[in-house]
Length: 415
Ligand SMILES: Cc1cc2nc3c(=O)[nH]c(=O)nc-3n(C[C@H](O)[C@H](O)[C@H](O)COP(=O)(O)OP(=O)(O)OC[C@H]3O[C@@H](n4cnc5c(N)ncnc54)[C@H](O)[C@@H]3O)c2cc1C
Image (cartoon, rainbow, N blue to C red; front, side, top):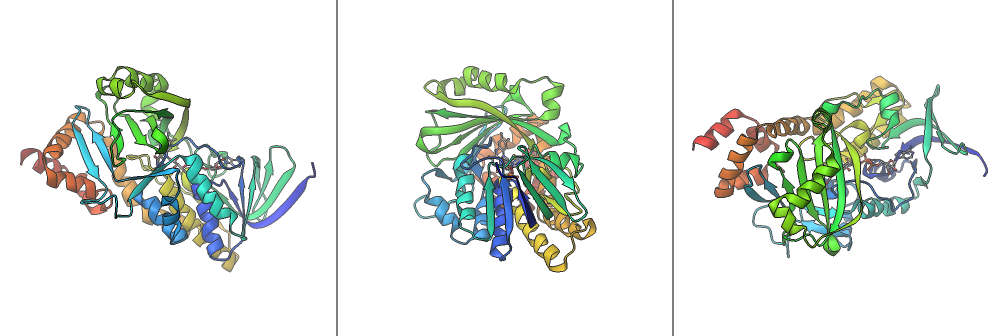
């Protein structure tokens, strides 16, 4: 094969939602970039496949009719809410929006296998002449040069020199660890497993996603998210710290829950596992990190931006991709790629996300107090106003703020 060296102002490593969003926002500004991925799309990514309201608004920011086009895909299901089930079994049915009408309203969320959703974004990428997408390029080494970085692929046949590197290569990014110095800390990292099952019984008619906090699997959670075609995404997540302290075998635990829990035993009786059970890491944004430096920015999972309570990371990857494009434009305009100039990127990302990441960290701690969780769920399952409060908490940060105050629980428990 012919060896070749390419030179670019901007190279984006990784074409998941973070990298693809960065490339699309740059293209909207008329700025060219090369976008590299080791995979050839469509490709799978281990995930719960839930696309939140924040994803919907990020799609609109890329292109106003992108959400409309997503809702026309047969590969997605609109989702109208979430079922929380407390350790004592109290079920809380929380719509994302009150008085919703599935026939008339635009859904607040979707569920779509990542193999399809990421390919949906890549098809947008392929329409843009400003983006050079190169698939099947596995970058094995990244060296600092005087003016930027030199990326070389595994085969040694492809080399890319770039002034600015946007590293969006996911949770296992060695660039994030080795060059940006972001450590994988078990207290800020979650282990997750995902499986696809066909014909799980008892799914919600409006495609509510289900999060179950089971008393013998705390502080972890078990989820069932409905998918088109009679499939469901089923999985478990637990903080890596707990996994190693308690020596938890996640796969065994997940299969045990499905086989022995009185409710799931029944719901999975006619279900069939489709494909393998796969695991992947979730780098949580429960701690602030430095996410840029000389000639580079980290985006999405490479920057550890996953919500520590909900496990949601797609939207935060897209948000950071958008801010990386804004900063890249400034870098080009001012021909400044120095670390201190790049700090504006860190500020913009954390200005947008830190408040909610911090709150979610506190909510995550609630899982260590199952009795409190049970009391709240028990009350809310009988109290419409409280259920509405929890429902609004998804979109209203001030309400989430109230949820972290002890007085909220005292009033709730003794009223
Ligand atoms: C079990 C589990 C469940 C989850 N559930 C949800 C959920 O329901 N909703 C949600 O919002 N989030 C969820 N997340 C988090 C979500 O999957 C991530 O936050 C999201 O994928 C981050 O996007 P990204 O673009 O940063 O990285 P990725 O989507 O991981 O994309 C990185 C890309 O980089 C490429 N790449 C990697 N290394 C190289 C290399 N050396 N050379 C070239 N290319 C490379 C990869 O091929 C990949 O395409 C879950 C995660 C896990 C593990």
